[in-house]
Length: 272
Ligand SMILES: NC(=O)c1ccc[n+]([C@@H]2O[C@H](COP(=O)([O-])OP(=O)(O)OC[C@H]3O[C@@H](n4cnc5c(N)ncnc54)[C@H](O)[C@@H]3O)[C@@H](O)[C@H]2O)c1
Image (cartoon, rainbow, N blue to C red; front, side, top):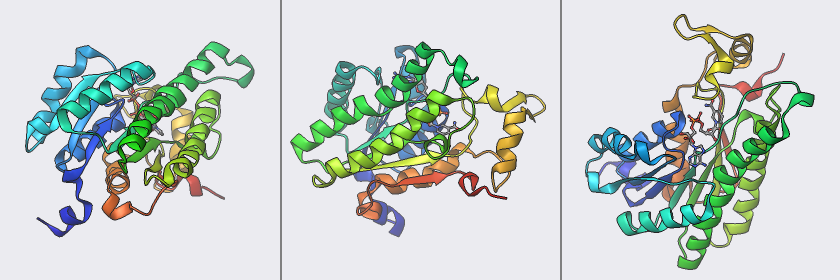
């Protein structure tokens, strides 16, 4: 066993990734499968279970350490059933990556549709954090499992991004609940941390940032993001992997809880 494998000990991890069909979650899924962890990928729609399995199984040293299932992360009964299904197939999970979330459009504050606003809160706070965290933490408290939860925050957790009011509010809530849950579960040895990606091209934000996919021409907003990012570019999904592997492993981050790691190319240090 190499020094790094020994340090991280990820072959002992049983990792659940929600929203596993997403752009960022897919990259994390690849990292954990290749790191030798047992991995359960939770996707939204049953129709994509088989194609997801076919994508990751060849990356796994032992395909029996991989599971793919469909579950609505906003439905507590469905999440509890998925937790039981994962435990039966791979053993009890000890890492939860809450990667469900996203935004829907942008516009002036006074025109924000309350129904859409509420949908975005549900997506990011309920499906993206509250429901899976409640199910996993309750099971871990009962079974004395010192698990690790990794939430997906955002630049909007720190500074409001123009036009995406509900997304900002939800992601500020994700950061707040990451800290609150770290305190709440700390005595039980359950760690709760977050990663705040800067700007990565995902399914939902691409239209806001890229005007022409063929030429790579950016929208005014996309150009503004790049101008304000110290590295002057968007992130690449694989650049999130190091932070996730680090936070998942109790051997290397076992005394760390309640933090959020920005992986943002320097967006948060923008200044004149
Ligand atoms: N892409 C970025 O630049 C960026 C930046 C900061 C934060 N984030 C956050 O990272 C996370 C992943 O982002 P992404 O860009 O990969 O998003 P994405 O839209 O590519 O993936 C989100 C996934 O969640 C799934 N999903 C939605 N509702 C669900 C539900 N109720 N149950 C189960 N699955 C559900 C979707 O099917 C989708 O596969 C999100 O929380 C997002 O807010 C992304």
